[in-house]
Structure formats: structure tokens, C-alpha cells
Image 1 (cartoon, rainbow, N blue to C red):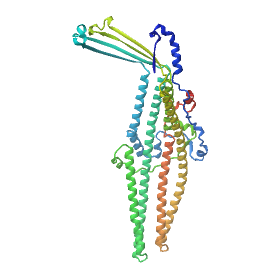
Image 2 (cartoon, one colour; image 1 turned 90 degrees about the vertical axis):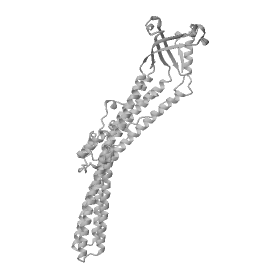
Image 3 (cartoon, rainbow, N blue to C red; image 1 turned 135 degrees about the horizontal axis):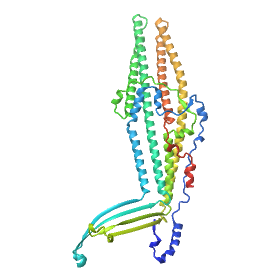
Image 4 (cartoon, helix red, strand yellow; image 1 turned 135 degrees about the vertical axis):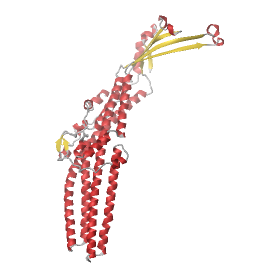
Length: 500
């Protein structure tokens, strides 16, 4: 940057040359030609999803409520989510990032404003006669001074404003990120709670299996005493007992692990999990699918909204980088008083002043400005790519969970029939065995089939609950965009055209 003084400070003979000098400087200045971003924001409606979502038998309604987990019908779950949202470390980190973004926006705003400072001091000096001679040497001289320093970089091309707007957009993104962190945490708590419910149901199945094994062993022993069965049948029946105990122990380990996971999600130690009671019978609520997908999803997903704000911030940074190619004008002024003593500071002869307007224009910088603009363009393209990928992933997550809900409903109905059939077969095999017209191998086979069917039904029930939770999360989890979020441009035209 080469400073060019104001014409009033030039010698009179040199003033006619000023226009020529300016013209030469403008011709030689750094150019931003040929540099522009390549990214284009994805239009959500171009992602076809009507056929996939039309096959869903979910009723058409609005988006989930902000307290969507209440649909599971368990007051303890409501308490746990509220506790987790009250102060988990991940939320503290998200809030700290928001405050950091707000502070950076404050710095960008301050850079647009003039600065004024005041300074005062006292200076004393005594030089030896051997150095300064008789006139100046050997005497002590002091002075007091008070000065006001004013400076202002005039924003001729709007670069500072664009930089501040980019910082404000980053604040918006950080605020939405904080909401996304809360959604992720509440969803994590719900899913961990579903896992706790599944572990308890697995414990119930293991207890039923142990009860069946104990009753079978009792019957076989009675028949062995009566001389009907041999020791082989007794050993076969005894072998089912430790297997059932192992399944009980495994279920208890899963209960303990789910409690520990919940305690961590609450930001507490493992002992907090010990006070978490068994979940109530969690309800698989009748899920509803908004009829305005996919375009409306963009404003209801916090990750999509945050990505869009990052695109806007990157767009403003391009504008800032472009203004660095243009001339800049800075105004500096210094005024104050200097006197040998404090009492003389108010005298008119003690005042001094300095005014320093300066115009600077980049001519040759080794490609520094072009590299900076190219980097800003690339950052914009990265933000656009991130936004586009987030939109694609958001719609995929909705489709995946809709398909999962539909399929799991059908699987659950089929598996309930399988359990009923296995129970009937086991009862019939037991009756035939007690009547002496059946063998114990039939009892063992039908007992194993019943156990497998019950375990599969327990897993399917948990998967249904998880699909319900994940669908609510995929639909934004009740996120309500603010007026500013709703107004952020979502098309490429507003972001790219200024740089063309």
C-alpha cells in the first residue's frame, strides 16, 4: 500500500501532476479479475421425494412439538430430558461458542467506528555539559503534555460493513448450533432411555425362560422318579437353568450400562443412574409426517439453518476481500497541549495540533490480495457444499426413518403372531409330554422357539421406539426458526450474483 498525501500538502509545481499520478496508480493497481466462487446452493425441491414418502401410511400433519419426547408417555423421561438440558457440558460448550461469536461481532462493529484516546505525561531531561555544551548542558528541563488522538478509517466501499455482517451471520449460525446441540442431547437421552426399556424387557423374557426351565426340570424329575424318564432327560432339563441365569445376568448388565449412559448424558456420575427406575410401558405414538416436505424442512432443521447462515457469512467475507483492492482513506488527528509546568497547560501558546489524511491504493503486493480473495471464494464454495450435503442428508434421514417406521410396524405385527404361535406350540408340546404321548425333545425345541420369538419381539419394540425418536429428530425436533433465520436467503441468486 503506497500512501498518497492530500494535494494541499504538495508543492505548487507538483500539483498538476497529481491526476497523472493517480491515473498511473489506478492502471497499475492489483486486479481481482477472473476470481469468483463456483458454488451454487441446492434447490430443495429438486430433490424428489414424493414417491418415497407417499408410500408411508403416516397421517399428514405438522412438525413435531418442541417437547416431542412427551409422546412416549413416561413422566420420568420428561424429568430426565429436562435435567439434561439444564446443564450438560456439551451445551455449555455450544453456549461458549455463541458468546465467542458475539464477541467477534462486537470487534467487527468496533472496527467500523472512530477511535479517540487521551494520553498525558511528563518528560524531564538533563544533558551533561561535556555533551551539549554550556548553553544546553548542565540544566534540567521538563514538560507536561496532554494529547487527544483521533483516527477513523472511512469505509468507502463497504468492506468493514460486510465484515461486520459476516460476523453477525456467524452469530446466527452459532445460536442455531446451540439449538442443534440441545436437540442432539434430548434425542440421545430418549434413545438411551429406550435402550433401558429394552434391557428391562429382555430381563422379563429371561425371567420367563428361567421359570419355564425350572418347571420343566421339576416335571422331568418327577417323571424320572416314576421311572418314565431317564437321567438323560434330567440332564437336558438341568442344562436350561444356567442358560436362563446367563440371560438374566446379561440383561442386568445391559440395564446397568443403559443407566450409566443416561447418567453421562445428564452430565452426572454413574451413581445418578442407580436412582433411575424402570421405564413405564413406553408408547409407540401414532407418528405424523408433515405434508410440506422437502422445502419446509430446510427451515425446521437447525443443522440446515446453521449451514445456510455460514454460507451467508462466507458471502460477506468475499465482499470484504474485494474491497481491499480499492483505495482506502484514513483520517488521523492529534491535538493537545505541552508546557514546562502543569499550570501553563491552559495557556494559548501551549497548544499543538496535527491532521493527517491519507489515501492508499494497492499497486503491487506479490499476489497477496488475489490469494486472499481466492481463499474467500474457496471458503464460500466449502460452505455451499456443506449446506448442500446437509440438505441431502436431512431428506435422506427423514426417508430412512419413515421407511423404518412403516417396516417395523409390519414386522412387529408379524412377530406378535410368531410369539402367539410359539406359545401355543410350547403349551401343546408340554401337554403331550405330561400325557406321555410326546417326548422331551419336542418340549425343548418349542421352548427355544418361544424364547427366540420373545427376544425378537422385544428388539422390534425397541427399534420402533428408536425410529419414532429419530424421525422426530430428523424433522427438526420442534425447532422454531426465528424471524432472522426464516429470512436468510436459501437460493444461490442472492449470494453469487454480486461476485459475478
